[in-house]
Image (cartoon, rainbow, N blue to C red; front, side, top):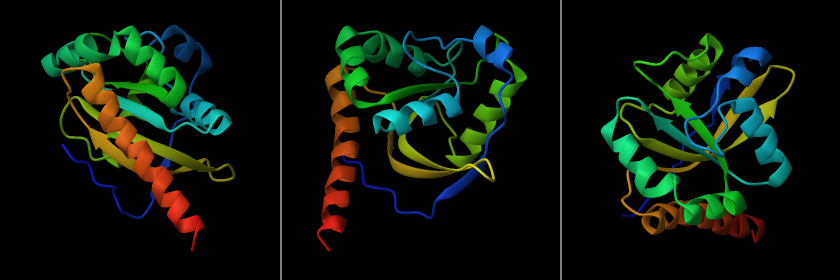
Length: 173
C-alpha cells in the first residue's frame, strides 16, 4: 500500500484546556500512549518526533481491537515507537465514560482530520501559536488497520522518511 504525502493548507485547531485532575484520572487503553494533545505537542517539540494518533473506538470497534492485538501490544512495536514517534490515543468509546475535556478534544481532532472510520491513524507534526492557543497541523500521512507490526511500522516509517526527504530537498534549493 502506497501512501502519498498530503498537500493541504495547514489546519488550525483550537484545543480545549484540560482540567488536570480529569486528565490525571483518565488513562489511555494502551500502555505507553497519552491522551492529551498538549502533552503530545510538548513531547514532540522536545524530542523532534512526529505524533502518531490512533483514532479508535476501543470498546466497540472490532478492527481497532485487532490492530491493538496485532500491533500495539507487541514489544517490537513499543520499542520502535519509543524511538520514532509520540503515541497519542484518541478514543471514541460507546460504553465507557471519558472526561468532557477529553471528549471535546477528541471531537475537535476528529473533525480537523476528517476521520469518518475507525481505526484511523494519522502521523503529523504540530506548530503552536501560544498567543492564540492554536495549533497548525502538518500532516505526514494516514493509515488504518495492519495485521502485523512490520506492515504497520513500515507504512509509518515511509511517511517519516518522505518528510525527511522533502525537508532535505527543500534545504537544497
